[in-house]
Length: 142
Picture 1: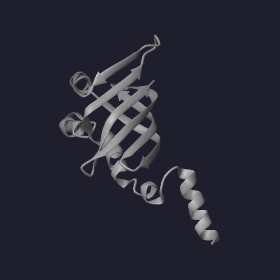
Picture 2 (picture 1 turned 60 degrees about the vertical axis):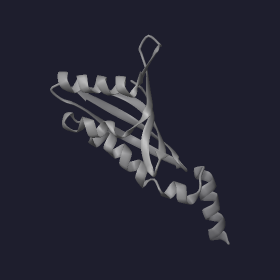
Picture 3 (picture 1 turned 135 degrees about the vertical axis):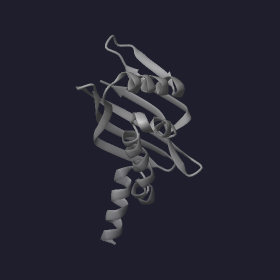
């Protein structure tokens, strides 16, 4: 009985069912590919991680927010890879949470560009469609 109560308390404390919390593997794969495919030679495959309705939003130093559609966001990344000698991103302190067909991934990130690095924070929102998770949104701030 105590073991059962402990499991129930653990599930309630994580905000979802045990099976939903335990099945983070499909979401983790997308997050891993978000970083792993972020290369000039894999950018077309990287784009497939995103849902067609994708939107990004990022904060600016003047207090405004820049938003982009998938096409605008992708073209900005493509231009970056054309112009840069070296461009990559690493994630740290990644926290993934899944609730049914919805998921989030919060992380600190380091953006590397031609020998310089900038640190920031991001959140990815993911949605499952036809048994595949895709990134529906990205918000980030430096």
